[in-house]
Image (cartoon, rainbow, N blue to C red; front, side, top):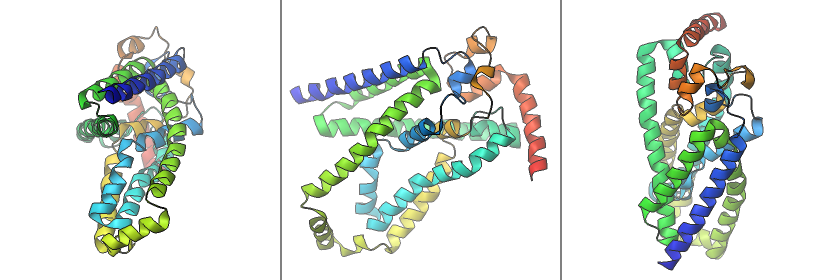
Length: 308
């Protein structure tokens, strides 16, 4: 019981510090629905990279690779999972600049679907995106609640309330700007901690040689990079993760902001700003500016025809 309370207290303190950082950083930076949703051109490539990395490095990275290797094909399955997790970032790097040129008034892939393919495809992509983001959020909460349950025996509902509550507070106030700074700090903490965890995990089993011997004694095929079932797992995991991440609104918002200045958006006296202050959805912002978005849609179609 005492251990559970200690872990819960440390978690609450960490979340409170993260929320305070997000609130402090976003103060004075959010003056329009535009800056709330996208924070366009407000940060450099370093923070954008950090938020993409943090979005892809949830608590599941502690469970999923090990499970992939142990149950679905050993080394080749673990490599396939890693490739599948990294592949969407490379695709965004290629497609992001092109979509940015074609739809400079857009905010996400769902709006690109509206501008490029019309309302029917937009509605379909929007529904799938909402469903995927619900699954994504559920997976994040399940992973973190499972981790704290294993470490300190903290009841899952308590962890979920803390994590969800604090995240809602600072993102509801600071929007994407608050998320950017907390993701940056998270990335700076996670990367060295992951490296340290890997070293300690290998050391705890007696070093690399002992770990290899233990795997060989259990199933030598697990260390075969050409193991068929592992290669198959890696291929369909890459395809599945890539398809899902293309509808991930966090990645789309971070990689597709257009090249206009943040200060060009309407100020706090704008009706769009007043109605969208607590709306995190790009669709909400677009609906508050229908004339602007309709003209952007027509312009996008013209650019698409001329660009080939």
